[in-house]
Image 1: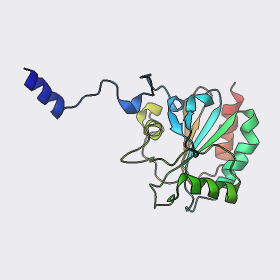
Image 2 (image 1 turned 90 degrees about the vertical axis):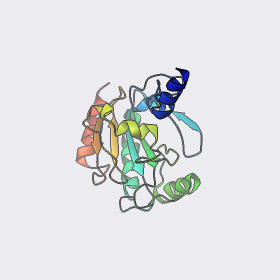
Image 3 (image 1 turned 45 degrees about the vertical axis):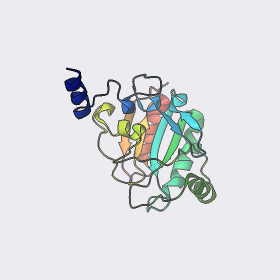
Image 4 (image 1 turned 180 degrees about the vertical axis):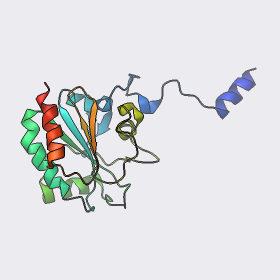
Length: 192
């Protein structure tokens, strides 16, 4: 009997608490701010620190046609930070190998070329094998199904409200300072 049970477990491995759906300590993930990540300097960041703020997650790259959006992201961050907006850059290299650098190189590029002051996370995988749990969540049906689906390219944006719920997804073509995105941001900032 033990042999059959062992064989069944080896053939059909089961995890009672899926690692990608929980944060440290076994707490259930209720939203994108329930994850811990590394920042661009290698320090752990508990995204729960941003609860109560409006958060814009953006997968970024340094050698992309959309890379000039860093300027718009910084402008939007500067304009709305005092009202509670947090822009978070998430470097990724899945699309055309357009983010080949190390964290140190990415940080240097962003600060020297675009004067980026908003938080940047360590480079992660946002699509496919090895996808970081944050992006696995953001692109899953757990985001009310409306925002599910693989990331298509660099500079896709996810807007998270003060309650920690995903309330918008914007493709790469939507500029950070566009009326569409700034209206969504200001609408969420107005909700206290």
